[in-house]
Length: 148
Image (cartoon, rainbow, N blue to C red; front, side):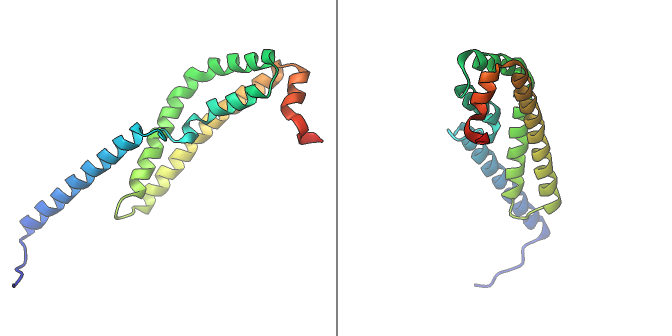
């Protein structure tokens, strides 16, 4: 069987069809990730999990102070976390491309890191504010055996 060269028009159609298939696959995978129990990534819920862990180590009155402060910052954190998840998804999509665009990937990773740092800054503010308001006993209990 002799292969004949394809025309430029046919090649363009094949590339377009391939691109459409890749986009459909990327969309399907993204939807599956968003529906899976492991999504959003664990890091996206990190402030809440940190608050839970710290609150468990505090006397009840001090834990209540921490929860009150956190709830006051929750409205600020939620959009930041959503932006972080979107940025993380974009980074994963770029990393999954057959032809890696290093510049775009580096930019997306930096953007994701910057969004994560903003979440961290608000979380740190929460803990500093809490430490200023809780009892000395609560602070000692929180530090525990770290200073021994």
